[in-house]
Length: 178
Image (tube, rainbow, N blue to C red):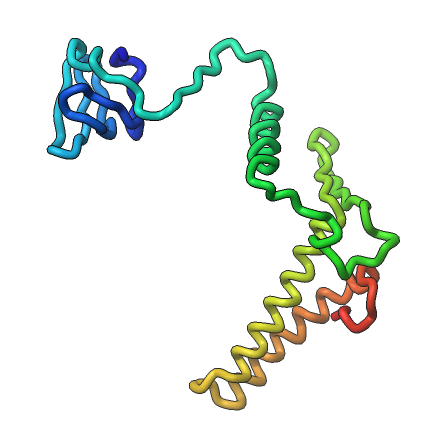
């Protein structure tokens, strides 16, 4: 390897010192932490190093970074069998909204609109509701709160539920609403 190929955090193998982590790289040396201690290697000793992990060089790649990352994420999801079924994501979503999208348009026309899958958006709303329910239970069961404090905190939770009633039209079953 060459000195310019090293970066802090890279794991390397040296024929004499074994496995090491690059800690610092200067113009003429590299400090590497091996099992038997930290060593400062000059350019000629760095030439004996080999990468201990696979390396990727993306120079000259003619694809948008967003597409490359999306491909890597998709391949990882496939390899680890982590596909999420949209029905599992928001099972309480009313059928007329399944597959829909929420579009948020900024006032400034030079900015782009933000689109979110409606089932993902709905899932976040349900998570807020469920977390409020847990918070409510913890407040009511808390041993150090007196009744006045419980009522005050419950008031904030009730107001939060009230603010979320705007999303009731998304629910399939009325029993699930706010």
